[in-house]
Amino acid sequence: MTLSHEEQYQRSWQERQEIAENMQPIIGRLYRNKAVELVVYGKPLVNATTIDIIKAHKTVERFEQQKLRLRESFPVLEVISQLNLAPGRIDLGKLAFAYTYKNAAGDLSLQQYLERELSDLLDHDDNIVPTDVVLYGFGRIGRLLARLMIERAGPSAKLRLRAVVVRGGRKGDLEKRASLLRRDSIHGPFNGSITVDQENGGIKANGTFIKVIYADSPEHVDYTQYGINNALVVDNTGIWKDDQELSIHFKAKGAAKVLLTAPAKGDVKNVVYGVNHKMISKDDKIVSAASCTTNAITPVLKALNDEYGIRNGHVETVHSYTNDQNLIDNYHTAERRGRAAPLNMVITSTGAASAVAKALPELKGKLTGNAIRVPTPNVSMAILSLNLNKETNREELNAYLQKVSLFSELQDQIDYTNSTEIVSSDLVGSRYAGVVDSQATIAEGDRCVLYVWYDNEFGYSTQVIRVMNEMAGIAYPTLPLAR
Image 1 (cartoon, rainbow, N blue to C red):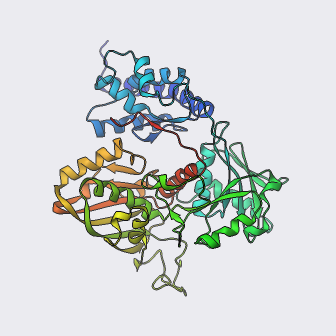
Image 2 (image 1 turned 90 degrees about the vertical axis):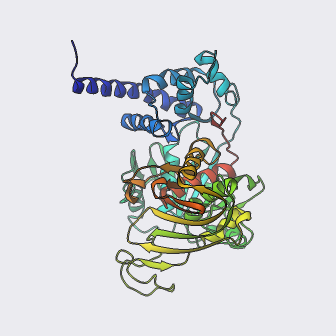
Image 3 (image 1 turned 30 degrees about the horizontal axis):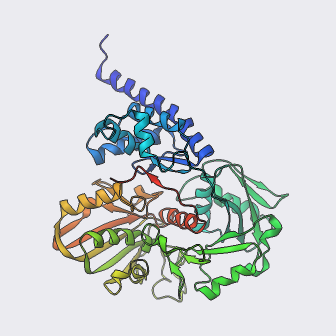
């Protein structure tokens, strides 16, 4: 019997759903049991819904101009699940596409091809010791870091969220903290179960127990009494900025290292993961993850400087309002920030342009910067107006940036979109430091203007997690390697 067009489409869709449903438990077991994280062209598959898995496969055509079908990637996933792998990140999409359409295996069988491509993970022991993590401060970034760590929790997890430290302790505080973790006006509901453990003074989230510690200062905390030792303390308060001030955390028993989720002053290393994270040594006790804007623009600037050279330029950030501004007109020590954030565009300063030089010294003194705070609660944009050392055009520049986003050491930091309809709310939850909006690119001669979106909360938090891993000595390869 000949099927109608509608029936053929429906049958095809049902086939994709069924394959995606069969993929889910394999993806979950690989992550829980082996700490092997699967992605498709950078799109995460761990904890993904069937629709997420289908959509991730659809993105491949955008980059390769040819579809990758789930029935083509599923056999690859099955063989991967049977290999003896050490922890790592594997791009299932790239492996399947190269095997199916690029003849990457040559005369090798699928098993032999995967053993070759994944040799850096094959039959290797996992000797990395888990690290206890304490979130000092539980605001916007702190709660997103908690979500990200809980999402990846399990027997094989190496970053283990053990506690959060907050001020207060008044009646009902624990319930309110749990509620803020459970529901988020911007990022939506928590994906899982959250309950309050009054007896033990903590929050249980998807099987993870998080001790809530009340203290006005780090020196009043003894982490060891909660079984927390050699902890990485992530300071989300922004109260202390330099090496001397941040050293107060070491007055707390059980604290070993400190990561600041804000730009640091003095000699503290400001790290943008993907650009200068290798400068972190095992002896570094205090590190800064810089700012959301610095993380958004520095990878793109590095990519441009490596290929074209940057003579000079200006960075204008169109930034969503933050907690530092007033909801309604009121006194504020900073210029203009006292005016109602949801009602005004507010010109203000940004240190991001100058901060780039801390991660990318070759750009020192070459960039100026300013910022405009706008009435949106999340997702910002950086406009990079640059003078290059080499001439280029829009098509060439976009092609280069697309390649960087897929096949370079910056593939986890830079995303790329060619949509003509994308707006800021579409980028809520982006796990990239920045997203190049290729349709807005302007390039003529040795001048270019690039528009880079970034989720200044979630995208930044994913960068912080990467720095945390680096400080904890957790370094897993992403395969296949770019060839």
